[in-house]
Length: 295
Image (cartoon, rainbow, N blue to C red; front, side):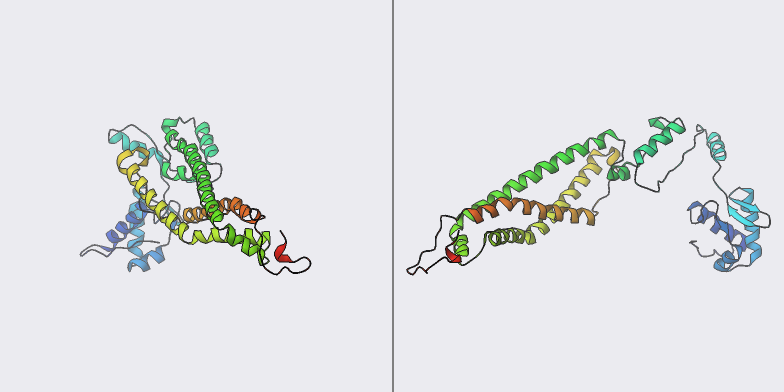
């Protein structure tokens, strides 16, 4: 979509059209190879068709626009030779820079390696968007790649520590309530029901623990991004600040629930099997077998 500015006072219609076309071509509102609709452009700029045609002829001389007879005017493709000529006139070494955007996120490392091999490029000739590729796990930066095993190791250690800590707390809780679980068995609760009760009780902790954990994790990530961007710098100079990843929060919440569920397994088994020695005592013992007196 074209971005149209207001017409300056005493500006001719042709100069107005030229200015608008140059602005939109430079800012890629008109992409290379796109056909310029003279009728639509004259309507948007509120000018006649003649100034539009004159502007197209003027820009065709500067090679910004290519006019094809009986077809129309098109935005020209970038000529790398012209770019090199301009760099030579400015005293710079001739060099062309190309930006590549991949359609798929799969096989990025292989695709980059194929481009290097096909055009005989070295690592110094290829500059990658480290911020994007590192998030996709396709960065070739050594310092970034070194963080992946470190992050995985920290994740596993924290997960195991969390399981043991939660399991220890629940084991202590279950041990203090042995009589309570014995009473449940006496009134007819099965082992499976005891296990389910303990699991649901553990998952109930997630109602407050997960929101607090996600909030603290987000704040810690913001602080880490600030440190990397303003103190470490380098490839982290473009690190985004104060952004929130919905997928990251959902994954963190899911991992928290799974961790609590795993940690509750052993205490639940203990609550169901550790009360065999508890018996209901009563003055009156019914004849025959009764569920309340079964182990």
